[in-house]
Image 1 (cartoon, rainbow, N blue to C red):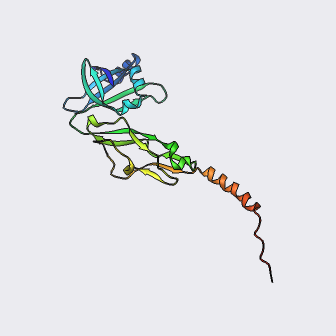
Image 2 (image 1 turned 30 degrees about the horizontal axis):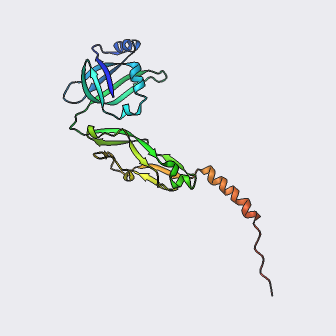
Image 3 (image 1 turned 135 degrees about the horizontal axis):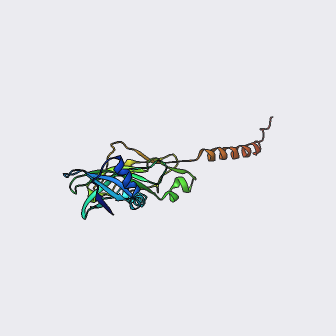
Length: 210
C-alpha cells in the first residue's frame, strides 16, 4: 500500500493548525539510520486509509517528495468528536531486522464448532489482535483462529494457534484467545422449562404392603 507525503518545514501548533485547515495532516517518520523527518499527508486519503485493516498491519511504501521508503504505521491521533486525523507517526523498517507489530485476529469456523452447532453456545473473543515479531517480509496481514473443534466450557489459547512461518508471538504467556459458553439467560430458561415438566411427571407407584 502506497502513502504519499511531503516534507513539512514549518513546525509548531500554529503551523499544524494551518496544515489541517488546508486539508493536510502533520506527521513524522523516524527510525533506521536516518534522522526523523516531519511530513504532511493528504487528510482525506489518510482518513480513508485508516479505515482499512491492512493499513495498520502492513509494510507501507511511504513516498516523500519522490523517494520511497518502507514504513509501519506506529501511531495516530484523532479528534475527540470530529472526523479529523490530528497526527500520524510512521517508523522506517529494515528488511534484515525483526519488527514488533500487532496484527488482527480473524476468527473462522465458529458456525460449525460443536459448542455452537450442538449447544447454542456463544464464542467470546478475548483478544482482537496479537503482538508478534518477524522480519518485514514475513509480516502477515492477520492471524487466523480456527474455532472448528471448540467445545462448551473450553477455550482457545495462544499455544493452539498455527502462526505463519517466521512469525512468533511476543508474549511468553499462554494467553486465552477465545472461550465458548452457554448464555446465562439460556441456562435459566432451560431450568425453568424443566421444572414444570418434573412436577407434572407421575409419581412412582407405592410398593404393596403385605
